[in-house]
Image 1 (cartoon, rainbow, N blue to C red):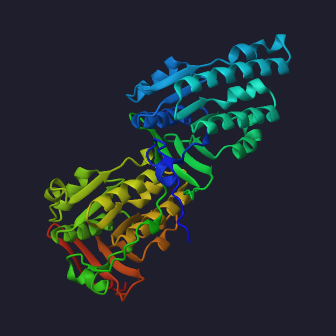
Image 2 (tube, helix red, strand yellow):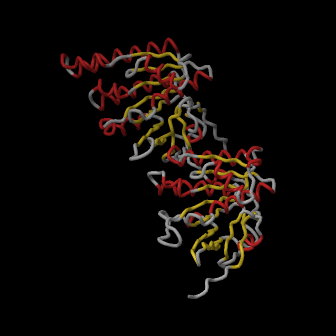
Image 3 (cartoon, helix red, strand yellow):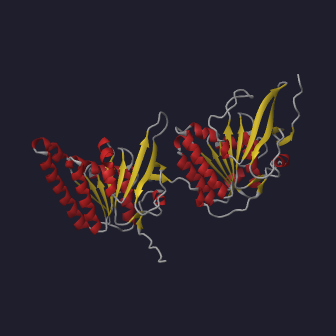
Length: 479
């Protein structure tokens, strides 16, 4: 069988998008970038051209909707310059506004002819490798009807193809473009859509979708993205668990407390997920600190992702139990990331975890707490699906993941979890607290363990300044 020829691609210039495109945009084709006003189209277009300039390619930005000064202001907001990018300013407004004195046909034909000739002259003179056309909305307004607009786009595509130009055409989504979008999409080699939504609380949520890309097995569906000062559009591809292909032999990971390890049949297995479920004050975070400390003392690296507790609070709480972790943190063996849940999307969080695990020899990952993370998101069911993909990735990387899940209610009253996440865990550790004779008593139970035997006994958990201990549970005397 003849070897399949590898397709030549060019970088989109957008962090994360090339990964979704399996390397970049196929060369010498026309692409449409769609999105509502403010979704990041112009910024993404500038990144596309800047990537060309970095490769010593000639680039043109044809603008019917923005002036050079406006483009320079957008670039300057990210600390960029337009050096190496030729800007061709065209204006459709004069002809459109004069429609009252002419027929629509005359206005369209005259203006389209003038616009076409100006662009073609610029291309013949500058001979670019990359071109941005901003935007198709103005051409729609000039042409006045869909068939004429389609013919104009087909002719422009043929002109560019003869000159091996990679073109990115910006298309502002409106009610009109929603009706004619399918016709335009059929002409383009690829279509990329930018989406933004404003929730009742918190920042704007942004997503990107490669809805069409001929000849490329793209990672379809929505991917989270953001507009970041200095970086522009940044895309966070959804995690694909199968990306970790190496087979890792499971190992027992111990807590450092023998009686606790006995409950798990000798210890917990690498490549699994443990849910630590309990109400406030039951010792959930302490359990996570326990496993983190034991791993660090074995010389392994640990990654801790905090959504509720501050880093300093974490250190002080651990030190109060005899676990001094500051030195491990300063030495880089303990990696801690402290997040504001309202400012991070599931996609961005997943990518951060993936980067930490792939770059460091991390054996234990703690997410504290998943409940706080969920509470900040508008679409919690989607967040659960995203975290499931992340957990599968970590499992295939041979990492023990400890997921802290808080129950609402206190002292056994109205206990519950808002979203069912029990299916996420290979192991479920249930912590409870109750009051007896003027004292609170903590209990610990291994409710579930998919791999190997485990103890079904309910034991008592003691958290003291001298450390953590687990002993046989003495039942409360009957009244």
